[in-house]
Image 1: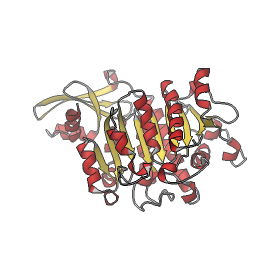
Image 2: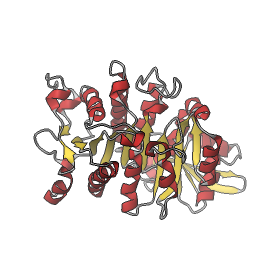
Image 3: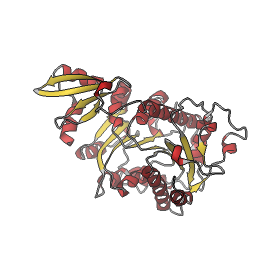
Image 4: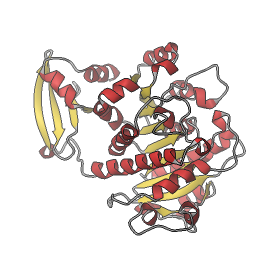
Length: 379
């Protein structure tokens, strides 16, 4: 990483305290704390990193005042203690965004740091902080005029224009401000009884897709293609049932801890260059279980990254099994990766999009997969 780049972002960051995170015990050679290049006394070597962690404990957007970044450090404490299995994924940790004088100052600092890291082709995990930080996450792409797909996991849909709190309405400016750079938005895991019907209608009118929590739990593998094409991925821990994430006081229901880990593994295998995990409040946690849950999600994200390193482009046909299918007078091609087992299907413009085994089965039964229809409509 060039000196100028370090100089640009370091003024926005506070280092972590490795010994405080480990309870003054340090880490064993096999633990992640020994393998993560963290900004403690010295700034990490970003050049060698595949994944960069950034903490942003800002919560004023949800109406909570604070002066420190305790949430990211609580997650780090749990994550660093896990065992290191993914030798092909180098992780750096650049510390925490300094809390700005205003909420907008914190947003601006995060955007500056993430923008520099993206320009260096690094994948970034943001440890929040309230969910409205996702707006700053998006604005990083908007500033670069990069058109993206978004996947957002949350029990609610945050477009409540009647609220004065950004955490309740930030999706509206993100999805409607012009010029807009969201090609497609997927909302995953919403719970119907927490969502006003008009909010779903708004999302549908914008041509975007929503997947209720029951659909996710019924066939979670169908969400892998949804997440695969996303450049921006976000996860609010309110989507996880209280018993698996005690810091979630919104609802007792939702995704299980294992399902949350599966979605993060999908994100690791995806195109997502930024991942935000939001909504964690340590003071609402019980025995640090939610921090541990999030740390497991991060571990599975790294596992997904390692799997993705072995995937190749669909142009490399020798690494795929090819299926030529005709359905509803449409000739198309399905591809299945020999390396990861993932599926793609060809659109009329001959481009391939992510799909599932179920889409292939439907097509082989002369039915048009809904994913195919939606993709053609958007194109």
